[in-house]
Structure formats: structure tokens, C-alpha cells
Image (tube, rainbow, N blue to C red; front, side, top):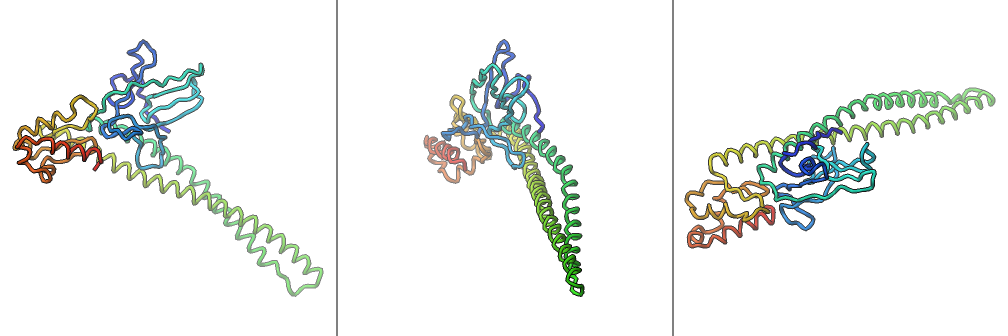
Length: 309
């Protein structure tokens, strides 16, 4: 399983960042959640529970884990897919697991980190695919060999009946027929086992290749949205309220509501998606906003965020 190690990169922006070098070599780990990430209580912008990486899945969990035991320096170790260690249990039986949680990233930075992770995820899938392809040939050869053995055994049994012979000769024929049946049963068992192995291996291969296509499509969509947000930001058409754990998260939207006409045509960047300013205006009466009722607009946007729609 390929992991891209970035443990020494103390300038890495987003999610787990090892700051031990800045702390005299003592354990110091920071975590900056995705903009859309939720904790166990459903609060947005906070660290989610860890989930193990499944190379056959089409998606990564928000707080993914690659867990290993008995490394050269630790009894247990937990890393993200980029190789940053979030905790470990040393051979001194001390657990290094304290994490300083920082405000969530905005959506643009979140997507940049996510794209990095999917690049590595796809590399992992490629390695697994190569491994499955190497294992396919011997399984196929075993299945074909057992099929030939079954054909020989079944042919021997079919030729075991000797009706025109005497009692002693017929008895010898029955003995051979019994042995042929025994051989056929053994061949049948081997045939079933080998074809089951081949079928299960092929099923895994199919699941993996389908998940690769899905993950690649998702990675490409992430890249497209990163470019879209960048263009909108550079053209001053982005109202970014995607980080909900910073001070005054709605401040950019409140500023935009001071000039409705100038904000028409802009995009509001939420933690989980982009939405046009005009879409909200279709639901919220602009006259009410101009009448100093901005709260209605903001409450509607917060409801979208809370419900994740």
C-alpha cells in the first residue's frame, strides 16, 4: 500500500500537520478540518472520527486512517493517506495522541487537500490492480487444470461399464468404475474450489476497476471546482463563507448584502458547495433585504448549510 510521507513538512496546510520540529522535537500535532467535515455530534467544521481506508471503495472518509502494528518504533501507528502520523503507541507504552484542533479550512483549501489525497488514493488502487493482475494468471491456470482433470475422470467413469463380460471380469470393471467415480468426485471438488477462487478474484478486480473510474471522475470534478473557485475569487465574484469555525463566518455575506445590486451574479461559497446569490434571491424577497431584513437571507443560507442541501 503506497503512502506519500509528508511528516517533515511543517508548512503543510490542512488536516494533520506535524509541528514537532517546531516544538523542540516533542510531539505536537495540529488538525485543520475540511470545511464540510462534521464531528460525531454533527457540528460542521470539526474533526470527524477516524475511518480505515478501503482501497476498493470509491470514496475516502473525511478523516481516513491507515493503521499499522509493530513498526520499528511503535507498537501501533495511525497515519492519514498522505503519511502524516496522527498518533502512535511507543514501545515505552506511552501514547502520543494529543491533537490541537484549528479552525476549519475554507472550501477551496479543503478541495486542494482532498485532490492530493485522491491522487495518492488512485496510486494505491493502481498498485492493488497490478497485484490482482499478477495473481490472476495462476488462478486461471489452476481452474483450467482442474477442468481437464475433471474431464479425464468423468471420461474414465463413463467407460467403466462392461456389460458383456463375465462375473469376475465385470467385477474388475466395477472396481475401476468406483475408482473413476472417486477420482471424478475429487476432481469435481477441486474444480469447484478453483473456479470459486477465480470467480472471487475476478469479482474483486471488477470492483476495484469500477471504483478506480469513480474515484478518478470525482478527483477530476474536485480539480474543476478548484479552478472555478479560483476564477471567481480573482474576478471578485466570490462570497466565501465556507469556513464556519472562524470568527464571524457570515461577515463576507453581510458585507455583500449591503449592496444587493453589486452582489447579483456572484457566487456564495458554502462549506459543501457553491450557490449563486441569485438562487437565494428567488426565495428571499429582495425588498425585505433592502428594508434592513438581512437576517432572513442569512438564516436561509445557514439552513442550507445545516441541512447540507
